[in-house]
Amino acid sequence: MRIALSQLTTGPDPGKNLVLIEEWTRRAADAKARIVVFPEASMACFGTPLAPLAEPLDGPWADGVRRISRATGTVVVAGMFTPATDGRVTNTLLATGPGVEASYDKIHLYDAFGFRESDTVAAGSGTTVIDVDGVRLGLATCYDIRFPELFRAHADAGAVATLLAASWGAGPGKREQWELLARARALDATVWLAAVGQADPGTGPGPAPTGIGHSLVAGPDGTVRHALGAEPELLAADLDIDEVAAVRQRTSVLANRRPEVWR
Image 1 (cartoon, rainbow, N blue to C red):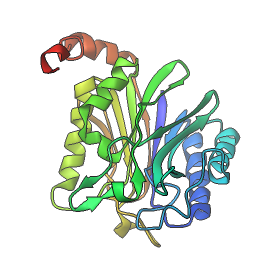
Image 2: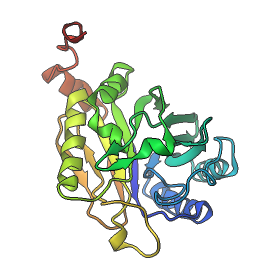
Image 3: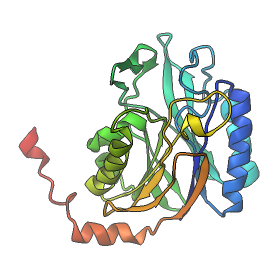
Image 4: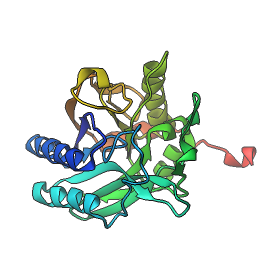
């Protein structure tokens, strides 16, 4: 299965960002990708008041993504913000395309490194997997990458890969943590891990969210197979689905778990 990671830079205007999504989706389709994954906050960058911009999953912004998906014949996964019931928003991944219509609400909120995402964002409460051409894929967002249980839950649900969208904060050691965590989560769950983040705002024009770039694809053995730098770029990668079963036979971490010991 060929997937594309769109490491772009979004700004505060959802309409302008939708134009970017169309442009990059067409590029991914030209590269023969079946799925194209955009970063967290593709609808509007962090640092923007999110509540006034949030829309439901049947709103015009999500419908715009659906239109792009239909026009290109690709499955599009993109980060947006939907209204929560208490005045906050939900950090949502929309997955839409031929045979696919699903969403994932970010479970683990970024209350870390002096920031409190939970002040403005409500947490999700369930996992999401999608099926594309008979291949099962899990969905995850940014800070989720620090919690191996989610990725093992994807594997337990039959997923052979997780698609992770991020707007990764910069800072000392943060790039090293990003790469280490992506590799570890792939190895923990013996899945392909395709992690796309916002490009480094210093490498692109206009207003930008936090991001460091360095999107990557890790194999089910935890090795990095493809990686980008800091600047906006499209990465197209072929995932060997059969490799997952081979790695799980050699590295039986899922089969050898003893969860009863920890309860």
